[in-house]
Image 1 (spheres, rainbow, N blue to C red):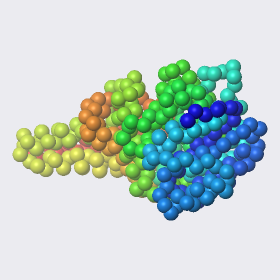
Image 2 (image 1 turned 90 degrees about the horizontal axis):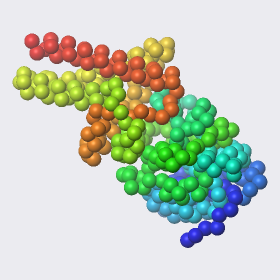
Image 3 (image 1 turned 135 degrees about the vertical axis):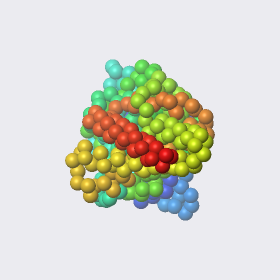
Image 4 (image 1 turned 90 degrees about the vertical axis):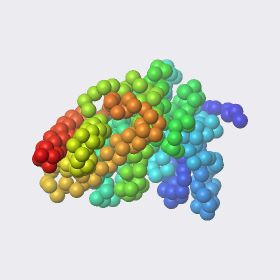
Length: 378
């Protein structure tokens, strides 16, 4: 069905469950719509099963949102929202967010007719809620990095879909989000931004365009570990298979050294007829994790009572690496075993610390394992 498109904003919100959070978001959008001089609409693209589906439908009716039944794929939901949208700007917001009053106005004002190369506006996603043990773990990872791009980068290479808008015409030109990758979501927002950059478009930040993101959907270690593992899997498709220009032979990372130690231990076990050598990878992994947490605490001059949080954050970070290894093996992408991704912008101080701490932990751990192996094999 073709759409008549006019100036305004279409908000696309993929949902599955979260009826309480969805209602909170729609409530917050009322004032944003009132402060916006152009027309707007809200599209809920949903695959919530019964009976909660009825709650979502009632919420849509209550707040005047359009309800669209969607698939389980978040990518397909967003593409359906693009197709069905009526206005020139499409704003993506996650269902566990709340809009600030000036959100529509701040997004819309960055789209100027004399600058058609500006394809999107990147806003800030602020996290609000209880300051729990789990949240203190999350803050020690890199997972929150992209949500604050708009605070420090004028032209980010890509943006999360928690608070980013695009010209509808450019979204259609780019054929929307990638849908052929495995899983229901992950890496498609990064891919879209990178493809736009390759096509000559750019994204522009507006730190005044703010949404507040609930911390409660990040408050489960298992859920965040699963999310990190999925992101690691998607890295294979995003960089090693599509955006290959960002993949280089760099300093060995965790997964490269881990695989090397596994290979070396297997050879050692066969040559020496000592199966104790096969324990080496597990011993190195434990030492690496412990040393990395200790070095991080020392680097940041924190008390050692913070060690458990650093250790937990490192476990979540390594879920990403294991996800990449898993996908590289089942899809057979050997470049993952010898190359690394040159990632787009992270905080310089964070990047320096990450590289230094990881390298020291990896190589000291390997040295200690080698000494122990030599002592036991005598």
